[in-house]
Image (cartoon, one colour):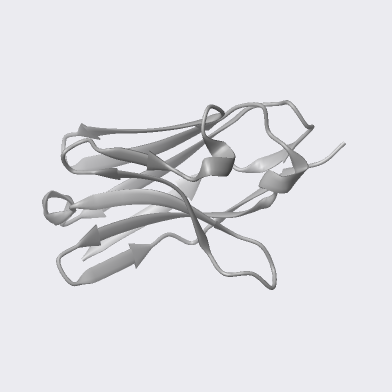
Length: 117
């Protein structure tokens, strides 16, 4: 089992920056991939950025050049970050942290990001 807890969302103006954090605990050494997804009402959850255990990173086209995903380990915890710059109203969504191991997907509770003037 893997437990995920996100933090860092909020209300910001267009052009501002936010940093999301996700703390992973439990069977972190079984994780093969982590990522950030987002969802708005009435739409499917979509991938924003992902990183494999080998360090391979991918981004959704709409966030390339603006968002940066990173990860580090500290003792028995794994931390996933999403640095979001030049935020746009279209980035408004609930952001979810995701972790995967063989046969399982885990989700955090989500954190709201609202970009509005």
